Amino acid sequence: MFKNLFKKPKMKDEMLEMKQNQYGARAFNMMIIIVAIVILIKAVVLEASISELWVELLLLIVGGGYYFYSVLKNNVPFMPTISLKQTIRLVFLISAIFGISVGIRNVFFLYADNMSGTELSYQMMMFFFISLFTAIGSGVIFGALAYCLYQLSKWQEKNIMKKIEVENAED
Image (tube, rainbow, N blue to C red; front, side, top):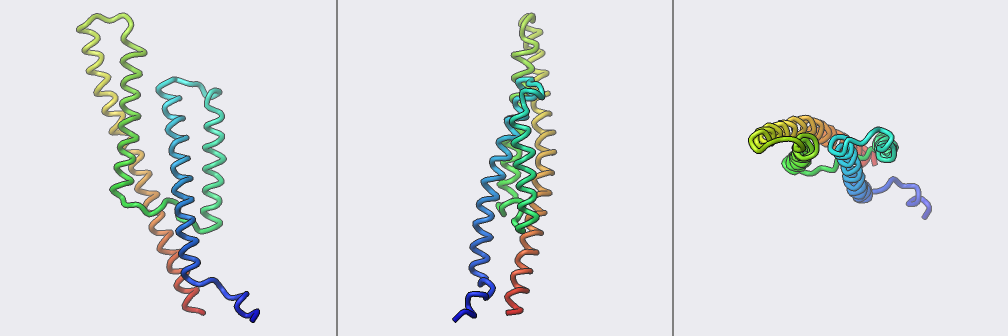
């Protein structure tokens, strides 16, 4: 009767727990991404100083540190296994929004005060290309980071599945 109390959990229970951990990881990833975007927009577009960003930076550091600790402690995948296409689309969408906001800031807040029509149109065209290159550059950087996290998550999930199979084979 008491023999069943001390048995290792079945594979279905571990798979269910792993799925729940992935949903939690997805929610936490989304929160960290939102905080990082808020920091980027406030720092670059609104030109906020570090003293104005301390709450967001504290949330990002504490939240990211706790997330990293829980990942290492509980063998939770770093990133939920969504397709690589979805990850790259999301990264380039965020980068495009970031690049456009940098361009709008440059055109309307910094250089549009004392310019005539021709000079203003030249500046707008120049800052359009600057914002486009900013979006492409940040897309490449964020895309490379997302791809590394994606591959790390797939590798880690494969190792978790091997560990579960080995434990079930021993039973």
